[in-house]
Amino acid sequence: MRSKIIFIIPIIILTVFLNVYAEIDGDVNGDNKVTSADYVLLRKYIMGSIKLDAKQVKRSDVNKDNKVNAQDYVYIRKIIMGVLPTPTATPKVTPTPSPTPKATPTSTATPTPTQSVKTKYTEQFDITFFRGVFARYLDDTQIQYMKDAYFTLVALEDDWVASVSYDEYKNNMINAIKKLEKQGLRVNVYDWMAMWRNFGYEGGKAICSYSGSNTKSCLDQMIADYGSYPNVEEYYILDEPGSSSDNIAALKYAIDYIREKSLGREGYINLLPNYAYSVSTYRSSYLEPLASGVKAKVLSVDHYPQMFLGANVNTSKEQYYNNLWDLHVVSEKYNQIPMMIVLLSQHGSYKNLSRSEIAYQVSTSLAFGMKRISYFTYSVDGNSGLSNALVDSNHNRTTHYYDVQSVNKWALKIGRYLFDKKLTSNIGLNEISYMGDYNASYSDIKATHAGILSTFSDHSYMLVNSAILPTPSTNTFTFESMDGLHYYDTDSDKWVKITGSVSKDTFVISLASKAISISPGGCILLKGRYWEKDNQGYWYYKEIDGSNVTSKWIYYNTKWYYLGSDGKMYANTTQTIDGVAYHFNASGACDSGPGC
View 1: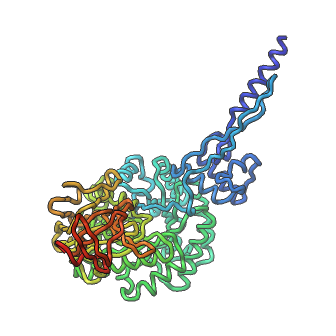
View 2: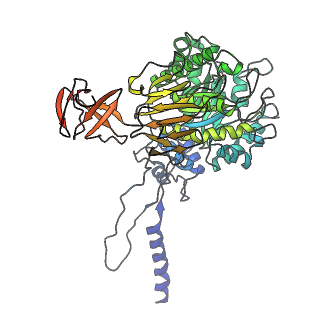
View 3: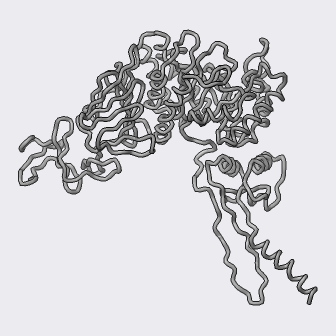
């Protein structure tokens, strides 16, 4: 009897263990969690450098399409980054010995991420910068500064001049990447030692030209060094290239190679502004050939408005708005993410910018449909000709840090909201002649100073106070009616109906005066009732949630209209309303009856 008991106990323990053991999709190495170790294993398997057993292959198929490829690699990377939820365990159920056989419930549900992956790239509105704190100085305090200022993508580099070896540079970068990963920040790798320095010149000698025969080895080195870290999303390639066919072919090779070999990463290139090329032929002979030929995911330009050099304000604005509009049009045509780099640091003849001048660049970038913004620069590390960046040479926060923090607080929320919306028009209000055509739909909005009105595909619209030079001025926008008007509250991320007075950091709303006052360089996102025509030709007046306004008079563009109980606008008819007969012409305007 004793021996029998001793024999049964391990069987029971083993049976219980087998029944509660669970597999987690993405847990390649089988340690019951999804970590960077699984990410590295899967990458090596896909690259063909290792083999996985059948159980590991099964756990690697995260999206359950019965194959293991880069899509699963991307899923695991996004799980680690927190973009996708960690899959729950899938129980492995085995028969349990029992004197009386019983049916054991079997779970057939396979945990899969709840968010679909449209591409191999995290597509969202991001705020980043050009030139940050060197990797060797990047500690938890500096990372917290970045997070507190609402930066979401870190351009990371180290001091390649001070680095005594490539290994020193690489190790400093890797240590910083790991710290940033812990804090949930993504990285654009600026590997000066392997790429830019090599793509450029060292001591007058080209080491690794991007159009040279050793480009592949340079790219391989960079991918090998940083490709196993899931928060690395981009590799910096080149700044302000020319548009020759040879340049385009070489850059396309680099972009395609990174896209193929690094499994989800993208190469990043920054382009010339129109004033450094030719304003009249910029789009056709420079921007579009590079956009269509290279096909980088991000279409980036650093246009620093020449008005900050003391140039003619109207001429500078026209160049700036043209550049933004070209960037919007071309990026939309080729399905790219448009990014404008915002001037921040004082250098050369550029002035020391005020908060309103910084806000103006960010607001106009949003108003022209930019899907990412970047600041030049975050730090003065390695840039002796710069001053007043976000942190000084001792990495202490400057006045500009708090300026940018204040701007980014609302810019990130508005940018995230507008990311999947299409820009439909730009209208100038007391602005330069370039700024859009007259739009009757918004003729009831007047501005006391220069302003921009941009409309988007969800019927929202943005007002920008562009009156910043020669004297920054508060701009008051008056409305014929605020009935049904909502503003986007960046504190709550919600649309809020205007029912009284509202005071925020960058604007003040007065319902009684039917006016919105916006501080210099600031903006506001609005959504009100809008007209919509159905496929039978009937017009409706819609609330912001898409429901019809019914049984109501509407005063619009100096005319009265009436919406029936079904929401249809009366047109070409005589109707009795509240016991009084009114006639409505073919366009729907009341032309006969009291008050018409």
